[in-house]
View (spheres, rainbow, N blue to C red):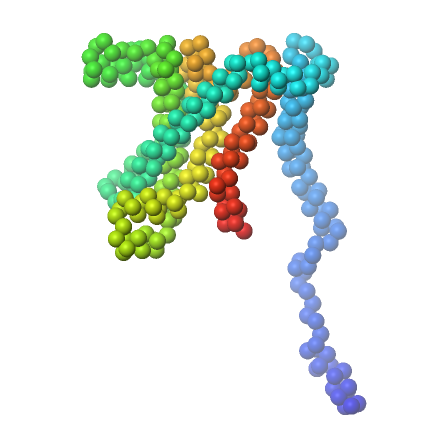
Length: 325
């Protein structure tokens, strides 16, 4: 027994049973390291608060007052509660029509952009000459500034512009249209401009989705005798559902803020037939100086946008979150 105990306490045994020292930097951070980390991240957090949170809170407070730049300080303005919000929702028909008009333009643009983008994506799944050159060409409109796009199409749709000249060559000299003096034609011009500008985004997202579709389900469907149309609509499209919804969500977030193209094309006219919600809020704040009323309209638009995006993501939210784990 003694011999065993001596053997157990021998240097050789102790060196074997001794816990190896931890490498420096592999343990949990101490209190000093946590303090240094907080100090290093504090400037970024302060900048985020000043740039993002503070203006949002000021605008939220402003929306509950009747403040205007011509009435002195914001903090001396009268607090009116939800009066601005109730007036917008109940009495301001111009605001309601701007929201409905924005939704209708959005639905038309998203439908056309998805249709053209899907067609181009399916086309580019095949091999043909000049594919790389055409790919870059089709993505070019998305890279142009919205203001520039609006100005280009404003020139194209002039009464003596290229669009009318082409129509005269095809249909005769009496077909010249006043695009910006007729409400349906003005809305059409806005939709055409927006579709040309942002179809490449749908094309790019859907092409990426098609390239990531697994081959095994497609091969199995072909072996079982499915036609190419059945393979596309019953096998490929269901697997593209998350990609399609994400593409719609991304574009919906942008098109709800539609401003630049409309401002350059029509300024909201004729009358208010092309006035989107962003343009209406701009006019309230910077033309009429009703900043508090415009802030209330902006927050209503924000809440509505969040609800809409939440509903659009509902069918694939669980799938997206599980895939990210």
